[in-house]
Image (cartoon, rainbow, N blue to C red; front, side, top):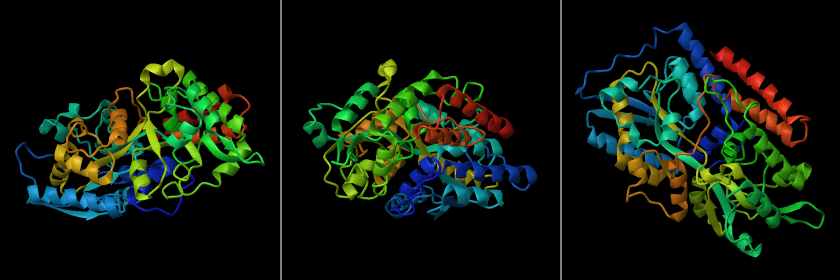
Length: 459
């Protein structure tokens, strides 16, 4: 969510995840620039008509992505494979390009032929504004089998029946738990329900002689690492938007269930104690990460943490499990939250046919996706790749593959107003956990009003 961006980082994927969970507001701002530019100069950036079936694409395209270092090398390797199999197409790659740079470049009439975004939150604005072209004509012409893409992933790559993106790779969220601490506390398995999570958190927590927190069984604070309303929502099945695109936060009782559970655990620790404890945490993407450093017994995180723990040479003996759910949703245990990277053709691409050929290769070729997943250590978004014997997946990583493929897994829905609904909710939960909200129901209704006003302006 918004704020808390840490400046130090080791690679582009880490930057991407920071932006996804901390600076989603930037997406809305950048997309608004695009919308304005599109309204002023529609003819300047008109999309070229697609070619007839059987036409061989050729020429040069530019490709911008956000990855750097090791992960950029993985991208380079797959681009090399593409060029070898498509000798008529040359791909000029530019790494380290975040969404803000890309949106501004497109708005100015430039930008790449192909862009890779770290955030599904841009999909609504990009599709609505035309910043990225509708890919449906290409998909239909080439008879692309979308049934090979898991349902939740298909949902986050389109908006208002316009599919302006294809899925690249995704992130799935679960919990990491410290096996040594569990054994010492006599806990034999990870929690499956929120009641079990609360009980385990209390049993695993240790306090210093002065009453301050030494080890937290589970830190419920919003705004800490990957803890956000978006990532917690699947615990109770809390719904963001109604079927007609309005805010559902004030009317869906699952939000009150979630926030009352969260606040009860905050109050057990003490908000001020948690705030002081959180201030001792090292950078999320460093060897000083609080879970790796032994300050957290249970922590919500994505599949990339597996690679980070290995790279950091952390000695933590850990296990992974799905996110706990409310007792009312026990049948959905094993599902969770996913978000992903999306790729599209920029408005005004000088070579859209070659751009589409490249995108189709990256997103529908099983071998290419497996190679990307193995190199970047993210979850594939093709069923064939998820089931490929060539996919490097130990028992821990397989858990995240299962979460991603689970039909009950969900994500934040695309919106024409970008991330407004998440921004407003984050501001509210910050006040809520600090004890500054007197009536939860009334507060959530007010959040609805804020969000609906923004949605009406966005159209």
